[in-house]
Structures are given as structure tokens and as C-alpha cells.
Image (cartoon, rainbow, N blue to C red; front, side):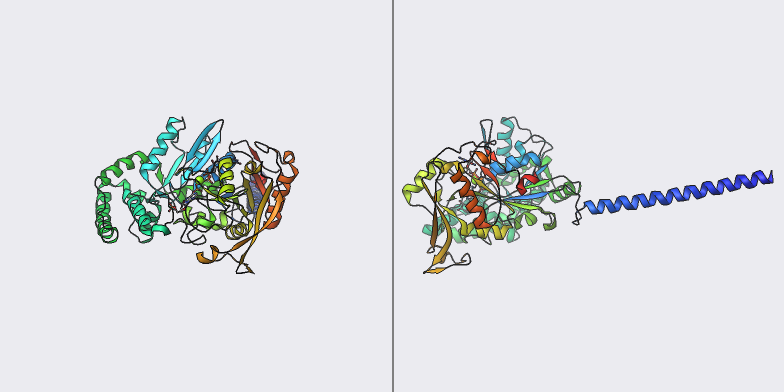
Length: 481
Ligand code: GDP
Ligand code: IMO
Ligand code: MG
């Protein structure tokens, strides 16, 4: 028995030893799994495959960001706007349907994708509800897919009133704003008496806050523009709109960072363009937000360490709406031709866009400011009948070559662009979907742009439809899809 007991104890001991060694090997397995996971984090603390790509306008807006974002959105789960408001007009055309989105990111048009309006955006709830109605009529349901930041600032009718009054007061020096109240809403945000989306969620507090602001603004409006502030009925109207959007309101920084940490890809949709940026653009002929890539981080609460790449969008030429310097602007007749061929009329205001040649000096500045890693060239087809194409490769001021983009508007108004003349292709590129099928002169034009800027051309757009798009297989951009 003793022997049996002894042998029983021995086997229990060896069993315990086995169990311990199993635990040790399990622990070492967990350790090596963790090591493997760490290796796959790419040294950035992110899961492999996770991506956050920012799309920015490289010129003065209207570069075709809507079309580009819509195309890319097929490969992303979340599409987020970080700046501006309904001054933007992003056109998306597919299967013959045309949508112009002003506040809601274009990703909403892709089934199953989430569209996010970040805290850096200024929201006019009436415009937003109008856009929701348009989408609903088109059979696009947004429930569970649209997310609006509780921290986004609100645009009120008095912001529009002040925008118009300020423009009138500027006389011939007017900026040519979209009259949507964007500037005055951002002014209030910075002056720290703006109201935010979260304020709409508590009716009594909202009434109190709005009454305080209206009293203050009325005094300013009377003193500055000699007119009283028209704010009658705004509180109740906005509370009604608040009820409509309540279901979409959340902390979007939590949402996006949560998505990114789960490895879900996020596409950031820029509005306006680099030269309209409040800090880096042709001030004061700019908008009032940070349109450049840096604005994506502040306007969404996505850390810079999470941005994997920046896509810059440029037309094959240049356009600008509103006033301000435009060194490569074409003379009237030539501008009219391009305007007609490119249908260059504002998506929001219908204003004719000023047209000019491609400006590589300006694009170099845009590449630097945004860290553009891949460039998209849109509207190549608009040059299909152009016999010769001018491209600005540098600026001279009073005979001297400029090395930097001048800060002074007075200098920028007088710079002389230095042009290179390239041959046109005089054949149709409309709807071409394969780079090899482009005429040689068109390929040379693109190669010239890429060489001059030191950036790849990751996408070429040959028509407004979704499918009229070329993504060279070897490009960095293709690897993000
Ligand atoms: P966004 O503000 O940057 O989104 O640009 P807009 O939508 O305001 O303006 C771009 C215009 O060009 C829209 O009417 C588009 O449908 C159109 N568009 C975009 N890409 C192309 C293209 O490659 N060829 C042509 N012909 N039109 C294009
Ligand atoms: P998307 O996103 C082109 C211009 C206006 C004006 C200046 C200031 O469609 O590219 P604002 O109303 O913002 O105070 O006007 O900025 N502007 C745009 N131009 N595209 C835009 O947006 C623009 N958003 C503002 O024309 O010159
Ligand atoms: Mg536009």
C-alpha cells in the first residue's frame, strides 16, 4: 500500500510538474504571440492594415475632391469631414446620378460606409436637414451611418446676415464669400461665444445661451453695420432641427479613434483647398478654416501619428471662385473656352469660376504644406482639344526668381509666372480607364508634373463619372485601396 501510495504521490507530483510545464509553455506561447503582434504593429502602435488617409485640395478648391473621395471610399469604412461647412460643394456622379454634397461626406453614397462630420466643421442645421431630405428622396438611408460631432459649432442665420454685411462693407475689396455665414461662425468659435451641436440637446440651456449671444451680437451689428440683428424665432426653429439630428450626434473623436484601433480604415475628406487655408492661403482671400492636411488632426481629433498618407487633388489646370490673386489666370477668351469645356461653374453658388494654367510653383507649396504622398490629376479630358498647354514652373518678381510663396498679397498680385509650353494631344481621353490607353502627349504632361513636383501621380480622372478613373497599379495610392 505504502509503495502504491508512494507511487500514487509520485505520479501526482509528475502530473503537477507536467501541468506547471504546460502553463510555462502556454505563457511562452502568449509571450511570443504578443511579440508577433508587436512586430505586426509596424512600430507605430497600430494594427497592420489600419489606414488613415487624408484627401486635400491642392489648389483653390473645386479640384474634384468629391469624385476622388467617392472613388476611394469603396476601400474605407469611415469617411470624415474635418473643416469648412456648406460653403463646400462636392460633386459625385455615378450611373448617371448626380449628387452635390455640402456637409455630409461623400462616403454616405457608398452602401454600408460611415460618414462623420467632425468638430472642426461648422454646421448649419437647416442646410444639414435639407441634405438629409435630398438623400432620403434619392433612396439613400443614413440611419446608423451618419455621425455628427457634439463639439461642432453651429451656424445661425445671423452669421449669414453678418457675412453679407461684411462683404458689402468691404466694397471693391470683397472676398467673394459663399455668403453661408462660414467666416462669422468661425469668428464666434474663436472668440469663444459660439454655440455647439451639444447645446442643441438641452432646450432650456440652449434658449438661455442663445439669448445671451443674440443680445451681444445685436449690439455689435447695430454699431458696426447700422442694422439690428434678425434673430426672432431662431431658438425654437433650431430646437426643432436639433430633434431631427439628435440621433446622429456623438463624440466623433471617440468613434474614429475606436474604429482605427480596431483596424478599420478611415478616409478623411478635405474641403476647400490649400490656397484657401486660413494660415497658408492667399490671405485675406481665403476661407476661415484649416483646409490643409494638418487641419485633419485638429478638426477630427485623430492624432498625427495615425495619418498614413496624404492624397492631394489638382485639376490639369487651375480655377478659383471669388476674389484674390491668381498668377496664372488666363485672358478672358481662353478662360471662357476652358470654363465651357470644363463646365466651370460653382457647384454651390453657380458662379463662373476663373480659369488659368496649371501652377507648379503653387503645387510645390501645396506638396510641402500637406506632405502630399500621392497626387490626383482630375479633368485631363478638358484639355483634349488644347493644341498647346502652358505650365507655370516658377514665379519672378521685379525680375528676380522667387524661391518661396510670397506672404504679401500685393507681391503675389504682381508676380510673373514663367511658363513651359507642352504639346497637347488633340484626341479624346474622355472616360479612359487605362494609363496605357492615354495618348503619349497626355502621359508626357503627367510625367512632367510628377517630375517637377517629385510626387507620384496616383490617380488620373478622365471624366466626372465614377468609372472614368485610372489608378496606376504600381502607385502608392493603389496599395492603399
Ligand atoms: P470639389 O469641390 O473638389 O469636390 O469639386 P466640385 O465638385 O466642386 O467641382 C469639380 C467638378 O468637376 C464637378 O462638376 C465634377 O463632376 C467635375 N469633374 C471631376 N472630375 C472630372 C474629370 O475628370 N473630368 C471632367 N470633365 N469633369 C470632372
Ligand atoms: P470645395 O470644398 C471653391 C471660397 C469662396 C471665397 C472664399 C471665402 O467645394 O472645394 P467662405 O464662404 O468660405 O467664407 O468664402 O473661399 N471657397 C471655395 N472655393 N471651393 C470651395 O469648397 C470653397 N469654399 C470656399 O468662393 O472665395
Ligand atoms: Mg466644390
